[in-house]
Length: 180
Image (tube, rainbow, N blue to C red):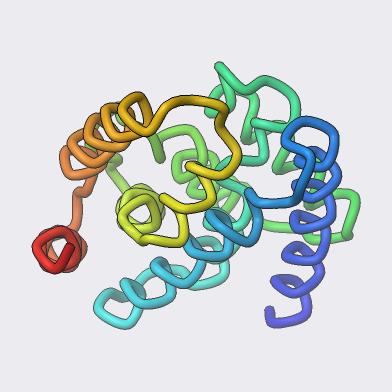
């Protein structure tokens, strides 16, 4: 398992860094979001009996669809994730692929996913958006006023609080927000 995760992690980091260099001018997505989602998911898995490999893979691959289609990244994400897994030689059973699919396609603001693994990834994604590193990275990459960024961030926080579907994650989010 560890080898699979590390291989996927390296591939995802490479793909996002290449994409970011072309569009933002500097690599930021992997280091300032994907890595944070993986950390948050690891923390939540300590509390729940989930398929750890699927959660880690989903945390790494949940936004891989951005590489192809920014606006519809959740719809194309699972297909892109399967391409990455095939490229690095990771095979999963049909059941685990179904769980991975749900975690990737339902990590956004579409309600509460059915499976625990998908709920962990959705909550970890939201928690990652509530970390200062994510805010700073977004402020640096966008060419907008402080007021526009502030409004965007306020809406993002509200959306993310609504997206968290694990009680432990909600507590962490509220504690994090109240400390700022």
